Each structure stands twice: as C-alpha cells, then as structure tokens.
Length: 404
Image (cartoon, rainbow, N blue to C red; front, side, top):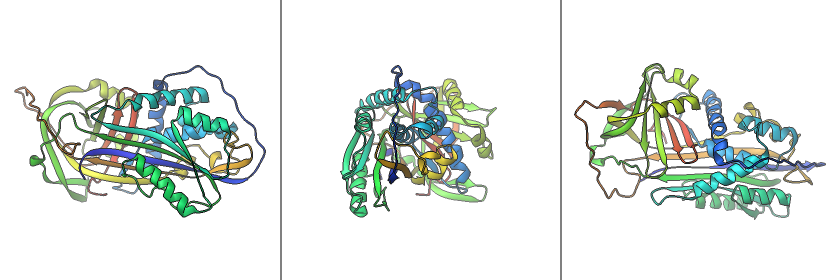
C-alpha cells in the first residue's frame, strides 16, 4: 500500500430505550476561536492514552485520534443536559466553557481544517444517522449541522444489516475506503448513530530513497524481535535529545501544515516515559528542537487499530451517558436516550514517499560535522500534529510495526 496516510472513523451509537420526561438547557457565552480547545483536547488525548494503555496487552500498538474522539463527544454534548452534560464536559476538560463556546470553537476548527492544501488531503467531519420516523429536536440537528458540519441522513434500524451497510458506506466514502465495516451488530431499537471521521494523507517534505530501504530487526521487547523494512535517510531534521527524560525527539514535516513527531525512549525507559509524558513535554520538546544532520532509520509500517471505548470513557468519568439516567433531552424530548456503544478505528501507514511517486529530489547542504544517529528499532511514540490549529490529529505507541 503506497502513501502515508492516517485516518480514523469514530462512531458513537445512541440508543433509544424508554419514554421519559424532558427538560432543555440554554447556554450563553462569547465566541472563542478553535485554539481555545487545543490544550484541553491535548490533555484529554493523554488521559485517554493512559486509560487505553493500562488495558493493552504487551507489545500491542495503540493508535487513535484524540481530535476525532473529542469532536464526537462534543457533538454528543450538544444534545446533553444536567449531570450527563457535566460529565462529558468535565472529562473533555471543558468545565470553564459553555456549550456555545465549544460549538463555536469546533465550527472555527473545522473551517480552518477545511482549507486543505494541495499537498495533503485532510478530511475531518461528522455524520448523524437518524432512525426513520424518529425526529430529533430541531435545535440539535441545526447545531450539529452548523457547528460540526455534520451530514444528517435517515436509516431504517429495524433492518439492522441494511442500516449498518448504509452507515459503513458513508464512513468508507469519507475515508477514501480506508475504513470499512466499522459498524456491525446494530440494535434494531437504536435511535441514532453519531459518526466522526478524520482522514489524513500527507507526503513527506523530504522523501526517503526506497533503494536504501532494507530488512532490519525491530525489538518489540527484550525477548521479541520482528523483521521490518527499515527506511534510511541522512538529512537535516529538527531533533532534540532530552537526557533528563531519557528520550530522543525528531519531527518529520509533511508538505502543508502537518508534521509527525516521533518520541523514542532510551533503551529500557519506555515504561518510565509512558508514565510521565503529557502535552507539556510535547510543547517543551517542540521548543527545544534544533535543526541538525541526522542519520535516520525509520521502519516502514502500516497498522490498523480498533477499540471499543465504552469502558474507557466510563472509567474516565462519562458514566451517566451510558446508563438509564442519561439525559439527552436536547436530542429528544419524547424518547429517553442513552449511548450504547462508542467504537473507534484508526489506520496509519508510513512509507518512503507519501505520494504515488516522488517527482523531485532535493539536495541538502550538509555541514561537515558528524550527524546524530537515530535508529528507531524499538517501541516509540508517534504524534501527527496540525500546526495552524495546534491539534493532535493522531497519537499512539508503535510497539510492533510488523503487526497489522
């Protein structure tokens, strides 16, 4: 599979359960810009990592889109009230904001990301599949359409297989067919499915020469090694070795506003780094990077991860949304709703070019001093960062690049 792409789709399934009374909510607040959410979204991303990592098997890859999951939960919160809304906001880190603030911030964020450059493809968006015959509150539909650029369409959940096929076609179309069969086993009593997708395909600013790629060992742990295709490139990169925190950091820019930051813990220090890493380290490292010559060895890989986030989100404090006391009166004032399932799938592929063919060869002027050598042959962290909105599109830990 050619090209560097990362994409993910996230579906939150909201289930109709029983009839109940209703009350609405009303918020007022000044309109912020998208940057107001970036620190909270980053904190949420790291909190999510720690919860997912505690459950992960040894040697398992963890990869997801914090931006995608935050967006879907924020879209859900637009229809939540009371304690259900408070828990969503508290977990997302939005407690000092109103729903209006958050709506305006996502509207701005999605607009900014919508100006996609010719060199990269970036699609971030949402969908709402509504049960035929179920009428959500008009304000909710308006809000998710206006602020979250959501496509809203009707499906017949009483025919679960057909409904799933329809939703999966929507997701596949939006993610260039990279994510398929995302939704299965739909409950016929479902009221709606909220979908978020993030599709990114970038090309390296500085491609690797595929003639230099060769087989090499990657050490998953002390006792396990796998064979990978190791790419090599000697070039000028933003690089920093943090001796105090036992890590090496390098950024590989894509064309456009996006780059991949790789954080490689020193040998034997993975668990320690995993224990302390936060968005503040990312910012600190970013500020300390300097342009130097690096002899870089990076594995070529393509991974796909799938996670059911129901338990994870409940552990993080979003409990009412999944229970019978859920308050989604902002979505329906007739039908009592709760969230039945939140699933997330992300795909990341890294190769020499990131394009079908690299047309140009750049010659770099190299200083005479010896280059730093960075051999990524053991588990590492990866972050795909969008600079104009300061968003973490994707993040995770690659423990085994040979695992699909």
